[in-house]
Length: 133
Image (cartoon, rainbow, N blue to C red; front, side, top):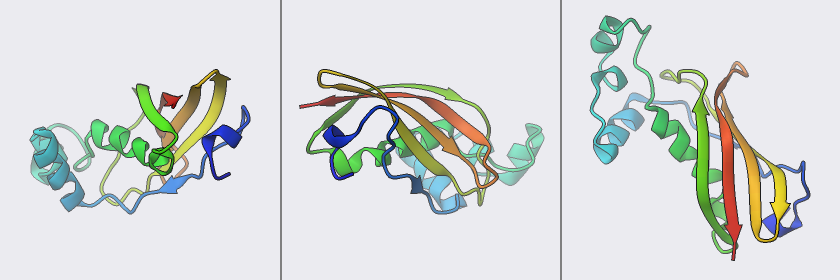
């Protein structure tokens, strides 16, 4: 589908598969966000915290969800996110982002969104409210 206006309830936008999570991605995100918690960048610190290795910032995963709606920036904007973190994202995980239209009322489109890892495990789920112009 070329526009969100053409979607029917139950339709999905094109899924996006991210590149494998890299240490440099997380270092860059730490700098951009100001979240320098070492569990996101230093193996030894993550292990001291009881983790098997460094984990991605939850907000890194959530922020990537916006990529699902980038192709539609001329049609409107993401007005609201409501997200629940369901699992950790580790180095080299391959995350797939998904959005399905749940409700369309006037110019407001409510999408069910999720991010799943390469094993099909949900790492994030929630809703995005998209306002059409």
